[in-house]
Amino acid sequence: MVIDLLIIGAGPVGLFATFQAGIMGLNYRIVDSNDIVGGQCIKLYPEKYIYDIPGISKVLAKDLINNLYTQANLFDLSSRLMLNMQVVSIKKKSYQGHDVFSIQLNDVTNNKKRDIIFAKTILVTSGSGVIEHNKITLSEAKFFEDISLFYKVLSPMTFANKTVAIFGGGDSAIDWTKQLSHSSSKIFLVHRRNTFTSFLSSSDIANESKIQILTPYVLLNIEGSHATGEIESIVIQNIDDKKIMKIECSHILAFFGLKSKQSISAEDSLFNHNGLLDVSNITMESKSNNIFAAGDCCSYINKPRLILSGFHEATVAIRVIYERVFGHKTTIKHSTDLLK
Ligand SMILES: Cc1cc2nc3c(=O)[nH]c(=O)nc-3n(C[C@H](O)[C@H](O)[C@H](O)COP(=O)(O)OP(=O)(O)OC[C@H]3O[C@@H](n4cnc5c(N)ncnc54)[C@H](O)[C@@H]3O)c2cc1C
Image (cartoon, rainbow, N blue to C red; front, side):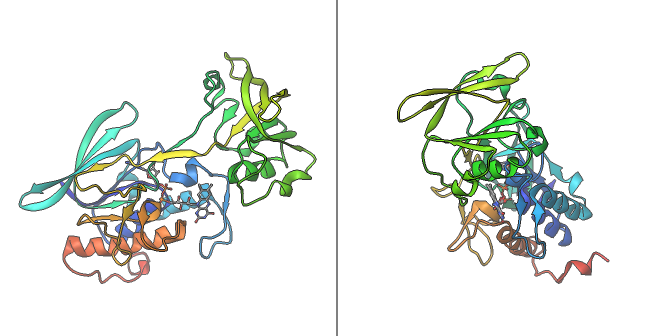
């Protein structure tokens, strides 16, 4: 079977694209290499408020994703969604006299090649690609991971009344130091430089009595039980005078940034040297006919890397895709034409 459209990536933009595809009556599927929808919003900052979605004064990232899912499910998203599936290659094929795409999926749970999907068009909403956190490189770190050592905050309650060592110098480190200081008993903010690269400055939190800022320090050791994964203390070293310091704490949050890479290979090299797809912002089509892109993975002059821009780009792309698939412009103007 050849479907009308394959959407690659179920972040906020891919999810909204499925809603638009549903309105247009396209026969689509959507795949994501994660085990959960939501992209960066869920992987990186589920508990952070977003303030710049039009018409919503503030919304938690995880609630935005829930709402997008519910909205898209009006058009049966759940039966069209394939999680834990990574697109690895896109090839052009001829099928019954028509040009289609043959898309190879890889099951990330067992790293085995899975189905090939045949699609008339593709919308890439893969953000900056498959996202992974940069992790602590100490060999003992794996014993504590997801028990007392975390690379993101899934629930702030995990850190309530706890002594937490937060590592990092960017937005996430400072943001969470500030937010968790309300509920944690003590926070050590440890950074290897004396200056922070955050939109909030360290002076915004310096006067909070529960926060102690330690710079320029690096992590040398994590001490605790390898059997239970409970941390008892950490050892850090001052980069300047080499002095060593032991801190008693039960939890670590490490914000060392992310690495992500586009993992899709295609015959025409789809991605530019920055790992993005150059598109026309009139059609959202890439240099490959019938391959479109929206959201963080697309590039054009003055492209804002914001969720709301992705929503617009997906809407434009889906309307052009409709025209390609059905050979005429859509007559559907508003969602109320369909949803009463
Ligand atoms: C800390 C932080 C705070 C932010 N705050 C805001 C904010 O307040 N407001 C705002 O508008 N924006 C904010 N952003 C930016 C916003 O999160 C992004 O613009 C948005 O997530 C882009 O959505 P997307 O769907 O294009 O990509 P993503 O959210 O990156 O989703 C892409 C999805 O594609 C999947 N994928 C990638 N490659 C493949 C593949 N080969 N096969 C299958 N699946 C694949 C990934 O697993 C991922 O789920 C913030 C970003 C960060 C990091």
